[in-house]
Image (cartoon, rainbow, N blue to C red):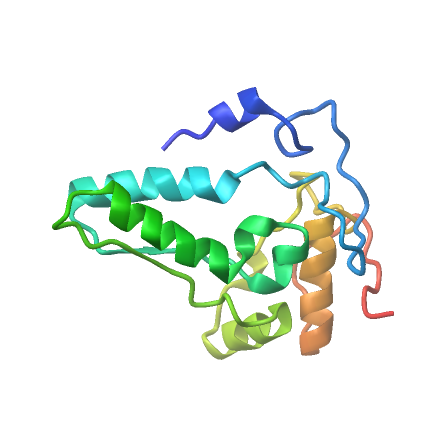
Length: 167
């Protein structure tokens, strides 16, 4: 499904080229420039619509509560509420549930679990700034690098810069 309308709305460095991607502040409480207003709600709304049409009962999303200081739509309470929205906004016989299997895990736990499952980490892309090599300094790259470092596993993604976010 096309979500290009988010670019028309703008308001973030991911959707508006005039807003620069800010450097990571993993200790901060400010919402990063990469936050797209209500993005996950838009994706979930489209997924719920399609799910109802095809008769699917579950929508899986890899949201992580650990990210919620910068991304409020990554909180468990958000998904609990959205499940209620789906229940109230679909046909009475429709049963669709948003499932967030990673919500309570931290990023290092996710990396370790991925290693157990032989996940193809070389395909894990988090950069909000670059499409060639990952930048290594945006909020998402910083979280990615810190997760792998915390898990004691080499991050296979190529970065322009590879800061140590454990310091």
